[in-house]
Image 1 (cartoon, each protein chain N blue to C red):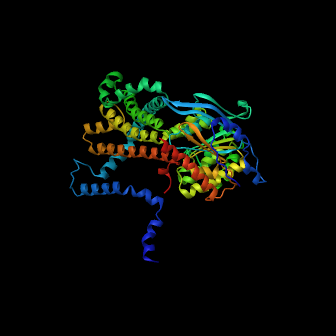
Image 2 (image 1 turned 45 degrees about the vertical axis):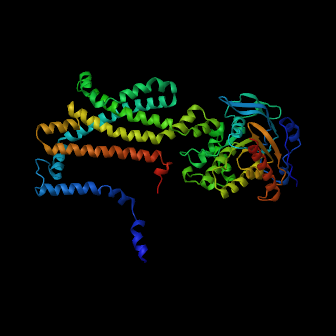
Image 3 (image 1 turned 135 degrees about the vertical axis):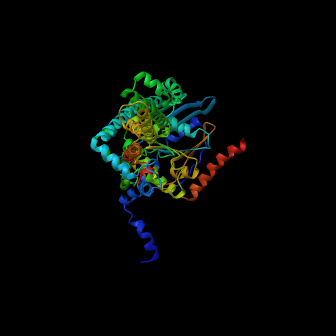
Length: 268
Length: 283
């Protein structure tokens, strides 16, 4: 075996399974260093509990059923809010992308509303809805609306007009033109909107739950702070990170499935 | 073999071109199913964009199955003429009709197809599905797959049927676009600089392919190009457009399949180029 062969060999046998693990090296290393720092007393546990303590706290909450219940409540709020805000944003994006009249009628208004930070509405929302579910859903839906609206609109407006002309020449009806040309053309941009929206979804939900809620992950963290349970606070934060990663991965899988034609998603 | 070079006024063209049968057809005995081209008649055609009059009265008759090339400098109106023929833009004045007695009922949208400089393939549809788009209203029919595959085979890309367009080369994409245009067996095929973006070698092989499918299927071909040698190599007749009018109508009588670089084609190309350039000197 020549020198070059032996050098290039590991690249040739790179397994997809191993590739998938590479991304977890850094998070795992951080946890290992953190554990070490806690055990040696370098970081006092009053400031930051050891990962093992956090896992223990998680285990206790899991046994009591509290953890699952709170995660479920948050997950439910996030999904429903996302669905409501996302569908309205998508509908407005379609309408304003396809119809000049609709765009003239609503785009300016939407752009004005967009510039109000939606979290600034929390006091108003509490006055309107109190602290029940609708308050959280409203805020999440509002936060999710704009990235999806803007990116759907952008996607539709930037579909290649030459392709649309081609579709018309080949006798496509309006419905066919939308299904076969406009929607697939706008899809990459819509996915960008979805991934932005997922980030905003968690952010909004956690803030809302922290300020005004009686269940959910944000509430769990706030309760823990009241009782100085720092391990539970850290646990909540880590769960946010995992849920965020999960949502992002889900949208990536969906992207891969629907955009397999796109050069960026083809196997290299 | 003779080469006729003729400059005529638009009025005399009608009579002049009537005796011009597509001679190349006689050369081949065997021929697959042929739909037969449609003749095209244009009278006093005008088109303006805003205050800019692009076409200033075009009179033209193209017999069924003829291969006509339209050349001219950029902005002379040649692409506009092609878009009007293909029905992509509305005409301002004059008339444009297909068929002997201009019976619009017999002419289906699928009978007239256009091919552009850009392939305009749907990136999210596989090659075969892209060709099926060309079937127009017959897309949903049972034999759509079979017809699309047949068209792909004609352009020599049957093995690429399940590929995404993004993995094809420029020439292959343009061949898929050609298959899409051919799949409905059009009777008029309009080309708007279809080879303009290809490299020299691909361009020559595409020219051969175009000539072959035209001879096989017998549609009326209208090719807009800025490349005079391409026009001379492919067409029965070359129209030179200057300032929105047909300035010259040149018959190319060379036998087919044409030999590239032959003296007679080169002579013809030279004389057409002189026409094009002399217009420059006058202004």
